Image (cartoon, rainbow, N blue to C red):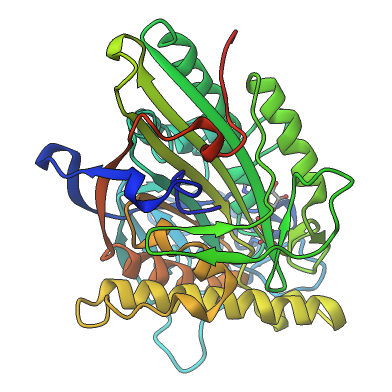
Length: 430
Ligand SMILES: Nc1ncnc2c1ncn2[C@@H]1O[C@H](COP(=O)(O)OP(=O)(O)OP(=O)(O)O)[C@@H](O)[C@H]1O
């Protein structure tokens, strides 16, 4: 059930407020996070050029040593690499900036200019030192209040394999990512407002693996078959997906840890724990003023947080067999996503977006182009070994800046029965 909490409500029960204040056109907010170099990559950075002669005593105006520009690095005989992303400020980065020491023979695309030196502007750029909290505060946190007031929102991490998507979305126990921080703050907001409003919430978590949808939180007794998508005019639903009523943030975190353990992962050359599936976490929320009386309508919204599988080149991952097949399917669904983004950006084609080309894009239909605030976190690597992937991701993100979504508040009539809303309970005693 991806697109909205309207899933089990009939369309006639769904009423959108079309007041000008509650409805506006917004572009997708596009951010880029550049991860730090890994230890293996650092080992391949060129060291300072070595002197070829011993230093001579200092004589003013005369160089004391000469160099042959030879670079040395500890990369076990592999060619040296260089930084290909330079973050200028919070909004601008340069792809493939000129090297300070351009005598070194590090990677560049044969037959092209030595340095592309392309500046890109995004809504926000995070450099290698950005903390998980900074990324969360400038991507997902601003969506929470809207979700509690009936506005759908989607956050998705896009990028090549091994570039930091899962680190950003899930993170580690010691340094959790967007999901944990969102849940913590969402539950805090619910707790802070419990005297004023009633809030109900439920969570679902699925993966799309090899064009099959799997419930990551399915009870052990559930048959391990793929789930089907059902679609009507206003929503896409996943039939048979389990929904869970969180008691508190710790409960959600336990659910998520279970779900993540169920996610399909495998080591590849590019990433020791590569996610081989697209993971979609959804938090369904509905709220109502306590004082508003029994006839007041509910605000309903869904917050979707998506960790896409990484795009990959077989030559970088050196994948074979199953991994290669998975990679082909991952690339195909990401290509379908790219085609949808292209179509949504172009007014001439935006009425014919090819959502049906993959499960992923069918699932995301109302979370990309629909009634939804969308934040994209494009994850990139600063190492020249990922030159093409980083360039592609930046171009992809740059195009996505042109998508416009129409935001409307979702309200449902008070007479919609709670049973129709799925297994949702009031979040009490927080
Ligand atoms: N900002 C960061 N700070 C520190 N380490 C990071 C950061 N981003 C990524 N890493 C590390 O880089 C490695 C690859 O990151 P991650 O698994 O998040 O990549 P991914 O994009 O999700 O890859 P895949 O698509 O293959 O699943 C991990 O070891 C991760 O801990």
